[in-house]
Image 1 (cartoon, helix red, strand yellow):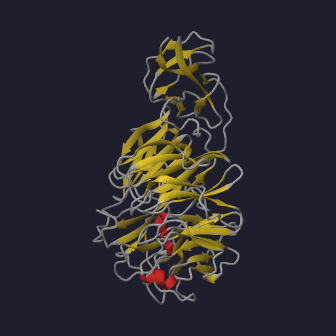
Image 2 (cartoon, rainbow, N blue to C red; image 1 turned 90 degrees about the horizontal axis):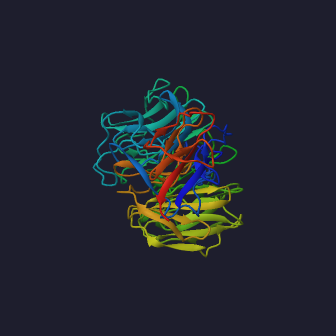
Image 3 (cartoon, rainbow, N blue to C red; image 1 turned 45 degrees about the vertical axis):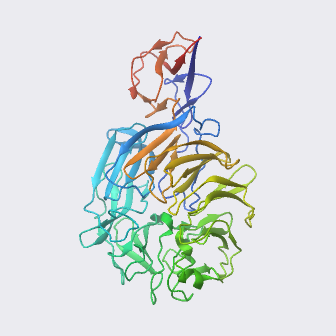
Length: 541
């Protein structure tokens, strides 16, 4: 008897395990698009894609999940890969993943098939820093942001010439410059030589915001946020975190600023000058769209943190329902603030030790509303990832679970996929260069793990439509279900992709099944009104 897996088109247009085989004659209704167009998925920076219908806690395992392909790039990938579904590009409709490198390159890769590059553009010689924090060159570090309505990708490059930071607006279908870009970033007391654009970019109400810190606390610097008009790239607003002092970097472990439902912006800052009137180092800050301070929360021991270079803002804030923000700094304390009354100095709703401390990295938590509980997943350098329960008003201080793997001093990052409140999978890039998938509800149960090659610190995986995308020191790695047929473009003449197995076809669901000698990827050209396909994975008695 021959054993095979059969597949059917699901509502996302991909092909998933089912009771019937794939039919391409079916007119398939489209689900809402799943796009990852900003750092950590949403403006609250939860890090969760809750529209993942393909990957589940049942099929992410060693039997059916693994690496699908890699695409080589010309430098380190610190920025989180971004994903656009069903993009009209290169005379077709394709899922596209966008990857940026420290060599100042941007790539638009096919998200479903390896080796297909729709465009690649390089934007000039990157900066070389004497600081060992990021070597050998500094180019594109902060995660870009994409505006789907105009088809524009916004990103910052750091160039050796000048040196200079430049804001670019790129057509996502061609990689060409838009809106008269690029423009040189400048402000009073802003030095492009020492300023580092580490956090993800924010697009809000027609303004692109960029945040800056420094390279290794070198030179005379300040923390900056700058806003630029998204349609003509003119500067519209500037915020200096320490205008009458110094330092106060916004680096946030790569996290982008968070935004609440009223359009207020939240950031966290590192060590430097603090007085609560003009200078806001070691603080969680609430800003309006014009970057005017509305409120702030500062640890009571800010002076001690400051003297020890223990940045409070080594991660960024994450917004929680309904009016809270949570963040964690180098000291390993998890801090919960009420965004309606942030309390200024020493008045967090909660401030407790969740991880080990020291001059390390405290990444931002990942938040997920699971089945019956609200979960926070906390990653920190020199620590084991932990899960906590958020009750809606407080965090239960006893962890729900603690992972067995402990990060080194330069940790990786976390993201989560789920189908609403079910099938939560926590994805972790470890400092051991392994990608791990945990059962989010039954954390720290490991569903699957495998090497990514050489990891890049603080980077987060991107999960979209059944695949996991990880940027490394030299490539984009793509993981997914290995026993599944993927449709690249639904509609007429779709393209099938698979990893292993023999493609079979039939004009009737009951057979007879005929072996198709095609290899992946295979363009389907129906010979009659319907055609069914399946993968034959093995044969035997």
